[in-house]
Image (cartoon, rainbow, N blue to C red; front, side, top):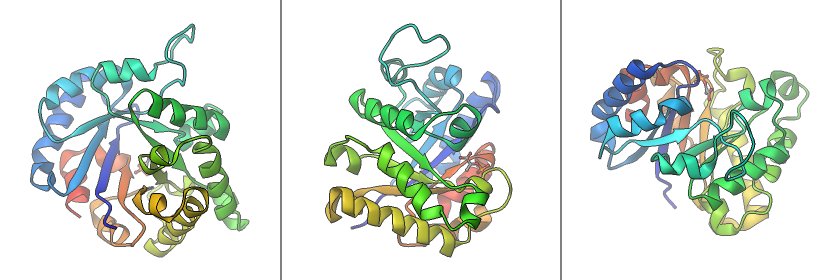
Amino acid sequence: MTRRRIIAGNWKMFTDLEEAVALARGVAEATARFATDVDVVVIPPSCLIAPVVSALGESHVGVGAQNMHPEPRGAYTGELSGPMLTSVGCSYVVCGHSERRHLFGETSEFVGTKVAAAHRFGLTPILCVGETLEEREAGETEAIVGEQLRRGIDGLTKEEIAATIIAYEPVWAIGTGRTASAEQAQAVHAHLRAQLVKRAGAQVAEAVRIQYGGSVKPSNAGELLSQPDIDGALVGGASLKADSFAGIVGA
Ligand code: PEP
């Protein structure tokens, strides 16, 4: 099966209104020629989703959120819900980014409730998994990402699993300039797909898109994306400039 590639840019907390609108327009223009082959997604800070959606107009670029709360509404000061995100034109949501797990204490169980809620409210979840350097050096990578995956997709139907995007992001490679080698990344992606086969069967596992994330840039994207189980990239730093992001999409 050929899986459609998906390149998503996580802008984290790095853009104000003016920068976000300019970057969104720049991305739309610089990636337009790849639109028939690749899904292109930008993930601005939440308060800038609506202006980014409107700046993108009818373009090919999808918009995602960096996080959301699993409940549709309620007394959760500071949080955003799935229905709120879809109401402003958001289509994707990142669940369980390592910064949420490590800086804000999100557990795999909580992340799983977000993934399920995303499907319930019509958003495509991007479920992030990844090991720390310590865990890799202890030989625990497969066990850690396997458990994060298992809890992340807990309770989903096969259709929902097929429509979930997984992002393998080794924590030691995020924002460090250190990238997993294409072989290291492929080995973990193959492991994740094997876990998906066990959980949901070969047909569903073959449909799931697994992105790699961790210091992806135009110069290393081609080799990573040529691996059989790497179906896209989740990009942080290099997504903040339209030309470097477009260079990754082009790869
Ligand atoms: C990320 O935060 O998801 C990420 C991959 O960041 P960077 O590309 O900067 O390593």
